[in-house]
Length: 120
Image 1: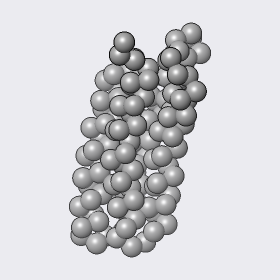
Image 2 (image 1 turned 90 degrees about the vertical axis):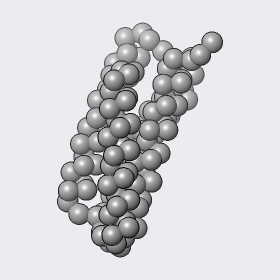
Image 3 (image 1 turned 135 degrees about the vertical axis):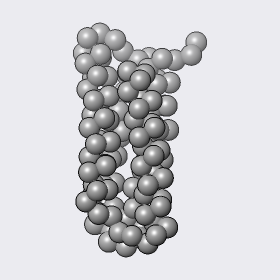
């Protein structure tokens, strides 16, 4: 796991959560700029997933590999799944779904870091 990339993803995700919450409060549906933002966030996430998979193929392994891989899959699938759900929901609750996902993503990344670098 790359620490600076994890921190970047967390900051971008929290900023986007704020943006989506403002859209929810303004009663605005999800629009194309929201999708573009989620796409950029997803590219950052896929970069972290790729680095983690490459490190595991290279021989580095977390203590709980199965748990790490399951969290990694969740992190990789969360942004596109919620973006589709949010875009299909044409009411104010579409951006709320995305805001919720953007608040969950940093927590999942913290858990990935804990699994990758366990405190002994």
